[in-house]
Structure formats: structure tokens, C-alpha cells
Amino acid sequence: MVFMISDEVRHKEGGPAMVVTGYASGMVECRWYDGYAVRREAYHQDELSHFHAETPLAS
Image (cartoon, rainbow, N blue to C red; front, side, top):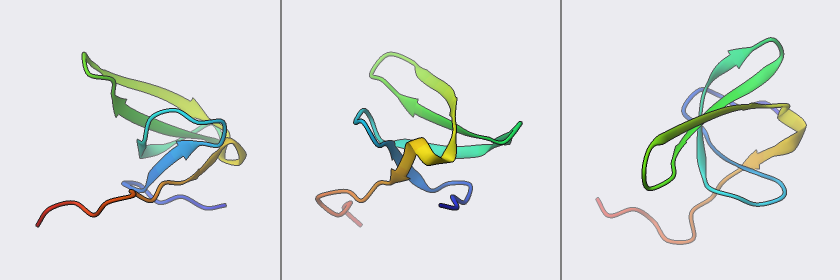
């Protein structure tokens, strides 16, 4: 699966919604806010799926 920078993703085993911020060494770099700080982690693309919010954001 191909992810573009700024795509919203989620780990296939669950967890928070994350934003793709780049690629490095064949890994997808993601960031998310955990309520206290911005977190970042790199995942193999097979571990992630696109995230679709249940409710649309207000415009």
C-alpha cells in the first residue's frame, strides 16, 4: 500500500490516528499527538492502513 505525505493512517493492530510525515530507510515516518506531546515513530508500510474518521470534521 502506498501512503502520501499528510495521509492519515492507523496501525493495523489499533492505536491513535497518525499523519505520515515522510519516508526513511524504507519505513513510513508518522507523527501523532498523545494529549501531552507530539510523538513520532517509523513503521513498515505493511503495518499501516489508511484511517477514515467516523465523523467528518467541522468546516
